[in-house]
Image 1 (cartoon, helix red, strand yellow):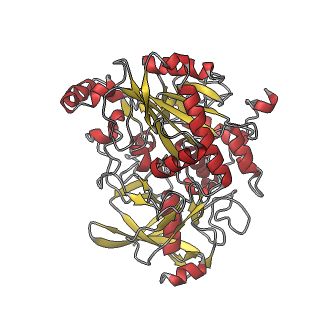
Image 2: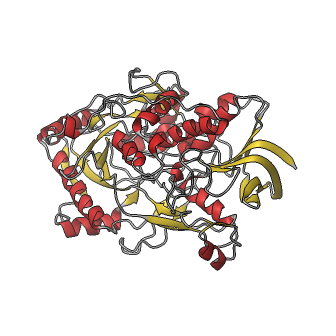
Length: 546
């Protein structure tokens, strides 16, 4: 049996970063096991930013999860895409790079045992990982592997939108990842020179030549090998063969669905539930799979009266032209379209923004479907700090059977109230004078949806996940925590850690890719026994001290 110092389960966002950092020491033998396939350079659906809708829903790129029927959304099963390729979801996501608000990390640090996860302790790792082309300062880094381009948000619709938000009473900000998140601005994105820069392309591919680093794709891990409460390796299948590998440490980087699922398959989780599905419990840890959090969103879509949207480029006959332009790193194929947006507070009860807006100069859904009628524009909007909680539970001892997933969207009074506010704020912004020269009427939800009851019913019928599942193996020291905040070791075990979005105690007020990469960078130091980077004490914007 082969032996490695570190076996990383999952070659997605966190796994790619960890593989790079852990293998930097040539004495460490590192193995990455990725269940998906290689992210080949020739694969235009991965590397062309504007092609992001094509992988979602495809069995070649997407694990295609679905929730159980959601009780507060008319029993709908909510489709949830997860990357089935090296780089994980960073190879199929919207390429939006947002850290969240500093108050997110202050909320983390307020939990018992989480004192070293406040914003001051996280900021150095945010800076370490990024190369912000807009320039460095107290908040932004310039030497990291993640190249970040901004905007440019040059389409006339973006300019009208930024004028409209000011007319609606909101501010512009210089950088939503800098001093002030609250406000509107062009967004940073994981696009460089017209190509998607996934975690695999930023962290993993540049170091694949290292003799101490092995990456195996199409390697489906079925179980953690345990001796008592110590992880000693994993079992996996590859090419139709069953294989096993020994490990000094096993590090789970499968994300909010796969990491708790694999723990449960291996006998770690709620003992009663494990017994009920035919898994012999070895360690009762009831928090595994609990505390699931996500962001739900809707699209407020308008028809556009002027031919300025990017809709014409969707035509089939134009795709060869788009592809040819993209080969020269320009044109509509070289953008992810999510070039600007912002964060606002929907009411005076919240201390920091609870709504996120993404503006697009086109009316289109994640799956690529567009309304009839041609030109349009839209905002994606939804509450960021919902108190709805769900779960991920194993259904069977068969590792190929996907877990049961329940998000419980719209299940709380706060969530429902903020959803009404979200739609009202979006309509207020899009109804400003700056948008009128372009506005040919609201397509979705449309004028028939106006009362709070009608809004909530529409959200329940039309809302989609923003693809930010998290928090199912949360850090902490209470009875429902799964990993130790100081080590990311699974409580009560040895040689077993979790490093991915599942360890967040609360979902951040933004897209989660950036926080996941920050967690991985910090985890690498903790795993290697390197003193964590010293905290950076900087002043950041907060409404109560503005």
